[in-house]
Length: 87
Image (tube, rainbow, N blue to C red):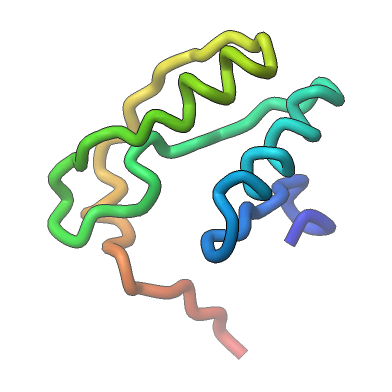
């Protein structure tokens, strides 16, 4: 994926500690991170409670946080849908 989009996906299974180290390695090299604070997309479109990971990562990597709100993402692509390409 990173060859096409310049994005590095995070592993969603396994060790949280390992995922945080992976994210921190990119922050330490000057990359920006886009992290959805709920940890996943909503099944209903209602915003879920935030996970404390963003604060931990920001404090330990000594980086700032720019809060953003994306509206209409659930309507545009609800969780479980995929993007189909024409042949």
